[in-house]
Image (tube, rainbow, N blue to C red; front, side, top):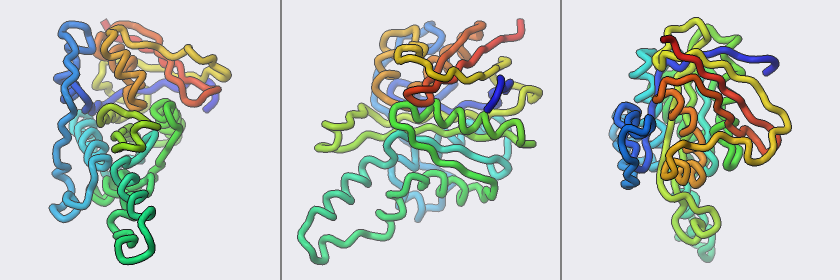
Length: 275
């Protein structure tokens, strides 16, 4: 990605602790209502057939929930878009169960079920999504530890100039059980999704956005949330690194947001709003 890329936000999906949906979270993100940190409630992904819903873990359900919400808000055909799915950890519960199984003595109890194996791969949410919507466009799955949201946004923006259709970005996280949680603590499940369009597309957010790279961005460059409770969430869940951008969109005020995409690279997003 060279130079600056202008883009628009056509639709947003959001789910997290105290953030039930994008529509309900906007007063909190604007500072008009207090943030209440209630646990996330993850709905069943209705796009999936019943048998697939039973097989899907929380990581898949979170990703599909916010992807669906963003596509509905954008009024876009989900089958017509390329996608970028990003997560720092993937399915923590499935990883835990696989480790428990493999730690057992050789024998029948050590066999890994095909469903567990299918859900263990990092692109499982992308696979479930494209099967559910009948999508045949390109899909990228990204993992960049705590910078996974920024890395995913960078991957999605890089596709826009050569794409005639919008690009769907989905960032999601789910926690590990103990004892893995002690090493990689993630307090709750969270997901955020954006349908991103070219600069000329009618924008759901009412904003003009321009992104440019900041090579060699030092630690501490990242934009923090205005609300202290949301900032605590941003620091603890990688998908919540999107919150400063969501705050800026919800407040509808010109802003500059810096989002890390790696330890040595960041994205600067400039937002302007029509009067």
